[in-house]
Image: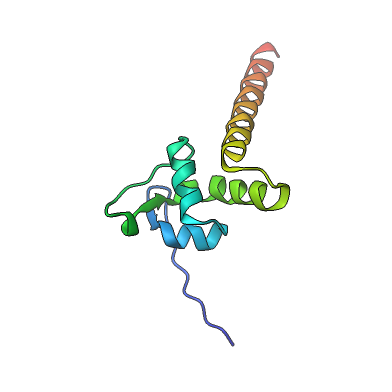
Length: 102
């Protein structure tokens, strides 16, 4: 039987980039490129000790799925996620306006 350690983390916590790469099945170079494109933030130095905010995990996991499953490149994955975020924001605004109109 395999025993796993579980730790509850908050949205303000940071995780080693290597762990994020393992969880999201991404190469470190992909995470770095996504950070350069503004999709996530990295902190720390030197290169081997970078950390990623835990809150970025869903976005990185989605980027990884886009790249693996659909063959999208890093720039395309970043663009797709930005467009999805914009769509969600517009839908939120429409719901707010609909609530005001009633």
